[in-house]
Amino acid sequence: MNDCIFCKIINGDFGTEFVYENKYAVVFKDINPKAETHLLVVPRLHVESLNELDDKDILGELMLTVKAVTKELGIKSYKTLINTGKEAGQEVFHLHIHILAGRIF
Ligand code: 5GP
Ligand code: ZN
Image (cartoon, helix red, strand yellow):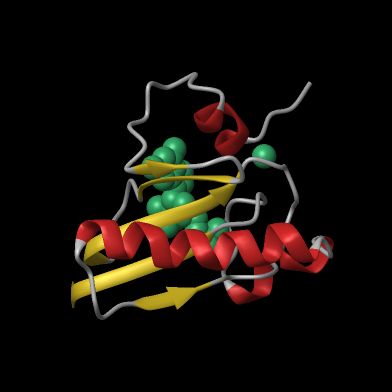
Protein backbone atom coordinates (compact mmCIF):
# COMPACT_ATOMS: atom_id res chain seq x y z
CA MET A 1 0.00 0.00 0.00
CA ASN A 2 1.20 3.47 -0.89
CA ASP A 3 1.21 5.73 2.16
CA CYS A 4 2.46 8.76 0.23
CA ILE A 5 0.48 11.86 1.15
CA PHE A 6 1.00 13.50 -2.25
CA CYS A 7 -0.16 10.35 -4.06
CA LYS A 8 -3.31 10.52 -1.93
CA ILE A 9 -3.80 14.19 -2.82
CA ILE A 10 -3.33 13.38 -6.53
CA ASN A 11 -5.86 10.58 -6.10
CA GLY A 12 -8.37 13.09 -4.71
CA ASP A 13 -8.53 11.46 -1.27
CA PHE A 14 -8.52 14.79 0.61
CA GLY A 15 -10.52 16.87 -1.86
CA THR A 16 -7.51 19.18 -2.34
CA GLU A 17 -8.21 21.83 -4.95
CA PHE A 18 -5.83 21.79 -7.91
CA VAL A 19 -4.98 25.25 -9.16
CA TYR A 20 -3.66 23.64 -12.35
CA GLU A 21 -3.30 20.13 -13.72
CA ASN A 22 -2.21 18.37 -16.86
CA LYS A 23 -1.23 14.87 -18.01
CA TYR A 24 2.04 14.93 -16.05
CA ALA A 25 1.47 16.97 -12.92
CA VAL A 26 -0.94 18.60 -10.52
CA VAL A 27 -0.42 21.95 -8.80
CA PHE A 28 -1.94 22.84 -5.43
CA LYS A 29 -1.38 25.35 -2.65
CA ASP A 30 1.10 24.49 0.08
CA ILE A 31 -0.76 23.85 3.34
CA ASN A 32 1.84 25.87 5.29
CA PRO A 33 2.67 28.74 2.94
CA LYS A 34 6.07 30.42 3.18
CA ALA A 35 5.06 33.20 0.77
CA GLU A 36 1.93 35.06 -0.36
CA THR A 37 1.68 32.53 -3.17
CA HIS A 38 3.20 29.14 -2.40
CA LEU A 39 2.38 26.37 -4.84
CA LEU A 40 3.62 22.82 -5.24
CA VAL A 41 4.08 21.26 -8.67
CA VAL A 42 3.81 17.51 -8.16
CA PRO A 43 4.34 14.84 -10.84
CA ARG A 44 1.54 12.27 -11.11
CA LEU A 45 4.28 9.62 -11.14
CA HIS A 46 5.50 8.74 -7.63
CA VAL A 47 9.24 9.30 -7.42
CA GLU A 48 10.87 9.97 -4.06
CA SER A 49 13.05 12.85 -5.15
CA LEU A 50 14.88 14.40 -8.07
CA ASN A 51 17.62 11.81 -7.54
CA GLU A 52 15.21 9.06 -8.62
CA LEU A 53 13.90 10.75 -11.78
CA ASP A 54 15.76 10.29 -15.07
CA ASP A 55 12.84 10.57 -17.48
CA LYS A 56 13.67 13.60 -19.64
CA ASP A 57 10.10 14.02 -20.81
CA ILE A 58 8.71 14.21 -17.28
CA LEU A 59 11.57 16.45 -16.11
CA GLY A 60 10.87 18.81 -18.98
CA GLU A 61 7.11 18.68 -18.50
CA LEU A 62 7.50 19.63 -14.83
CA MET A 63 9.37 22.81 -15.75
CA LEU A 64 6.84 23.57 -18.49
CA THR A 65 4.12 23.13 -15.86
CA VAL A 66 5.85 25.76 -13.69
CA LYS A 67 5.75 28.14 -16.67
CA ALA A 68 2.14 27.30 -17.55
CA VAL A 69 0.69 27.74 -14.07
CA THR A 70 2.56 30.98 -13.34
CA LYS A 71 1.51 32.36 -16.71
CA GLU A 72 -2.11 31.38 -16.12
CA LEU A 73 -2.08 33.08 -12.71
CA GLY A 74 -0.30 36.17 -14.07
CA ILE A 75 2.76 35.61 -11.87
CA LYS A 76 5.80 37.10 -13.58
CA SER A 77 8.34 36.92 -10.73
CA TYR A 78 8.79 33.83 -8.64
CA LYS A 79 11.29 31.51 -7.02
CA THR A 80 11.41 27.76 -7.62
CA LEU A 81 12.85 25.33 -5.12
CA ILE A 82 13.38 21.58 -5.00
CA ASN A 83 14.48 20.07 -1.70
CA THR A 84 16.29 16.81 -2.35
CA GLY A 85 17.00 14.60 0.67
CA LYS A 86 16.24 14.89 4.38
CA GLU A 87 19.38 16.91 5.15
CA ALA A 88 18.31 19.49 2.57
CA GLY A 89 14.90 19.88 4.21
CA GLN A 90 12.82 17.45 2.15
CA GLU A 91 9.85 16.36 4.27
CA VAL A 92 7.56 14.77 1.69
CA PHE A 93 9.27 12.05 -0.30
CA HIS A 94 7.35 12.52 -3.50
CA LEU A 95 9.19 14.89 -5.81
CA HIS A 96 7.76 18.40 -5.92
CA ILE A 97 8.78 21.85 -7.10
CA HIS A 98 7.94 24.76 -4.82
CA ILE A 99 6.83 28.00 -6.48
CA LEU A 100 7.11 31.05 -4.21
CA ALA A 101 5.84 34.47 -5.22
CA GLY A 102 4.98 37.76 -3.61
CA ARG A 103 6.05 38.54 -0.07
CA ILE A 104 8.18 35.74 1.45
CA PHE A 105 7.21 34.97 5.07
P1 5GP B 1 9.52 19.71 1.35
O1 5GP B 1 10.05 20.19 2.67
O2 5GP B 1 9.38 18.21 1.31
O3 5GP B 1 10.27 20.28 0.19
O4 5GP B 1 8.09 20.36 1.22
C1 5GP B 1 6.92 19.71 1.59
C2 5GP B 1 5.85 20.76 1.58
O5 5GP B 1 4.60 20.11 1.55
C3 5GP B 1 5.86 21.65 2.83
O6 5GP B 1 6.02 23.01 2.44
C4 5GP B 1 4.50 21.38 3.48
O7 5GP B 1 3.92 22.53 4.04
C5 5GP B 1 3.68 20.81 2.34
N1 5GP B 1 2.66 19.84 2.73
C6 5GP B 1 2.84 18.78 3.58
N2 5GP B 1 1.70 18.09 3.71
C7 5GP B 1 0.78 18.73 2.93
C8 5GP B 1 -0.59 18.48 2.67
O8 5GP B 1 -1.22 17.54 3.16
N3 5GP B 1 -1.22 19.34 1.82
C9 5GP B 1 -0.58 20.40 1.25
N4 5GP B 1 -1.29 21.18 0.46
N5 5GP B 1 0.73 20.67 1.48
C10 5GP B 1 1.40 19.84 2.31
ZN1 ZN C 1 3.69 9.68 -3.97
